[in-house]
Length: 206
Image (cartoon, rainbow, N blue to C red; front, side):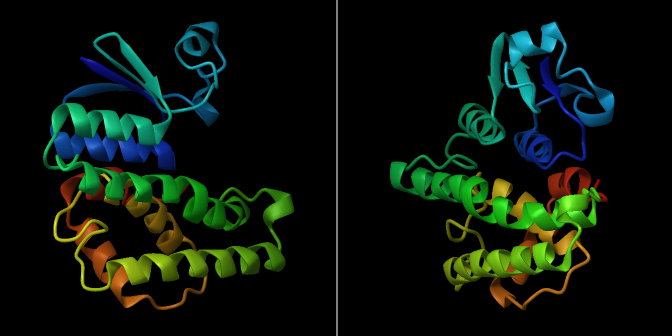
């Protein structure tokens, strides 16, 4: 059986668990990271030398890096749907996965660290204001892309929606003032209707 190491409140683990729900693959999850430890043990570092979550083992294939895991699961278990068959469509989805990692999550993270994790250096109005500014700029990009579309690739839900959806959920769950982005909000509402999102993403931040 496929194994997943990671705590359920991790944004990066949530991507993987949501993807597994979408593709319908059974798995065993092992708590790891933060209060659960595990990630600095020799046994875990032999699997993932970064000492981070998530990590998966699928029949002996060990992978880390959350977006890589999402790509792998979609390609192996949902080729032609979650992972588009057309190369152009596939890589349009993949660019949003990379955009999540390079643009929107780094914009949100300082506010999350201050408001939820209560890390002192992030607990200032200036930090939250800057996070709001950068996140609004990122969401304006997503708003333009979603104009006239149900999902980031168009009419169909793909792997591209998963990492971005998890990040956007974190922003909408934070106690901050937010600008209005109607297309993003409509897309977010559609994501919340998916059982995998409801189970693995729509949970309290921690």
